[in-house]
Every structure is written in structure tokens, then in C-alpha cells.
Image (tube, rainbow, N blue to C red; front, side, top):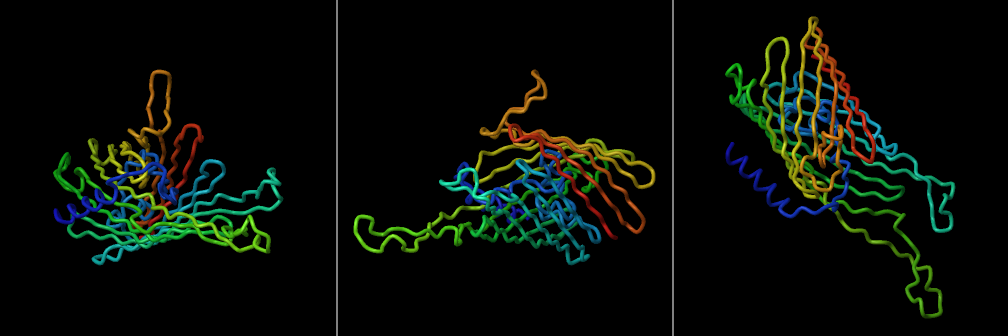
Length: 358
């Protein structure tokens, strides 16, 4: 295990040694997909344990029981729609497989040009899609690993760009801070690399444009077919390292504290902190209250104010609620909601529905 972790850290340090601000493509890959994680400030790499949280750490698939489904939807800023659908199947000793699909839809946009700056009456669409297959497994009771292979596709009218990417992750259960002296109740440590893959470059008929190859000479040279050559850009590579503990835990309620450290290739390092309080009621009903802070330490982010005296500089505040109902034959259904403020861009809400069949 030490050798595996050493190699994993070496790859991250080598690949992200020189991060560059704002020089990556498909940055929608940095937007969270599950309400429970987002409402905890995205401090979730050590807590991933269901079908939809494969986004944070594919090793979390090892904790999936039976067959699980997940769906999340949110209206992002300026009318952008962000949706995710996922499914996972536990194959027993063979591990867990998962399929995951995300769509980022920009909607219809009116065409403008120099002659018609208020619009030509024609519209075009733009969207970005990720389709992923993932696998997670427990090597021993306290150590899990996972990987996810995904195809990224971005479309703007008649032009598109594609890339392939790989996610890797591990989860470790320890006895530290365990109130029961059991590993499953102690500190959890998670680590993941997201979006390690090929570069993206746009191509399509929208980039074709007639040019005059001999502007200073007479002749029929002004309608030669030319094409703009676009640059290739890397995906937003993210390294996450996090830990979580349960300082309060019994049959009635539990309290979780988690923290993640992020090292991306397109921004400065940052810290996410999250909390979750859960209360178990009769009849298999569990309620959740969550809160967190995302992006502590990002120098180019906005400033959040709760009041004139309480300020979270360069960060995003998030809150959320959740409900889970456990039914017979290990079936369950859950609904989670998150709210986050992203400064000048406004407020964003995310709704997630999850279920387990058996």
C-alpha cells in the first residue's frame, strides 16, 4: 500500500508542478454533482460511499450495497442546466461497477455578427457531456481503491472537442479517534486524482472561413477556403486529499467533520471544510443537516459576508438538508438539497435523489 500511495503522490506532483490560472478546458468538470457533498463545502473525498459520489472519489464505490441509483439537477448561473444520472451495482467479492453521465446545457443562444449585433434571428446551442464507467473494490476491510474512465465532449454549434480522462482514488479506514475502537468508526482518509487525460481542441465547420491569400494582387484569390487552427488545452486536473472523523456517534445521532486539501493545475491550492449532523428516528427515518466552506485560500475568489463582523474571505458558503428512509429488504430512498452562494454570480441550489433497491 505504501508503494501505491507513493506512486500516486509522485504522479500528482509531477503533473501539477506548474499550475496555470485559467488555462484549462472543460472547466465544468470542477462543478460538484451531489447535494450532500456540495452542502458540506465539497469536503467529501473521504466520505464518498454511493453511486453519485463517484465524482469525488471512485474508491467510494466499494461501500455501495446492492444496486443504487442517483439523480441530481441544478439551475446553474445565467440559466445553465446541470444534470447527473448514475447507477452502481455491487458484485460481491468482485467489487462494484458504475455508470455515470453528466450534462451541462447552456441552452439556446442568439447568433450575432458585426452587421447584426442585436441578433440575426438564428439560434445555436452549446453543451458539454461526460460519460463514465467506474470500478471500486475493497482489497482488505480497511482499504479500498477505485478508478473511473470517462469521455468528455464539448459542443458549440457545429464545432466540438473531445478528450478521454482517468480518475483514481483510495479510501483508508483507521482506528484514530474511533469511539468504538473499530476502523469503520474511526478517521477516514481519502485521496483522488480527477481528470488525468488527453487535451481538448475544438474543430468543426464553424472554424472554416474564406480568406484572400494575395490581398495585394488582382485575381480570384479572395475565396480560398481557410480554417482557424485552435489551441489544445488540458483538462482541469485536481488532486484531493482529505480526512473525516465522527466526534459524536451513537444509535440516536452522529456528527461528522471533514476537511479536504485541493491541488489543481489551473488555480492555487485551497481547503474545503464540511460538517454533517444526522438524527435517527423511529421507522428507519434519518434527517441530515449540513454546512461547509469551499475554497479557503483561493486568492482570486470572491469574498463572502454573513454580517459586517463575520467574513469568509475568498470562499463559498454552502448549506443543505437531507432525508433518508430505510425500508424493508435493505431498500432505501433519499432526498438531499444544497444551497450555495457564489458571490456576484448569484445563488445556486442543487437537488439530489438517490435510491437502493436491495
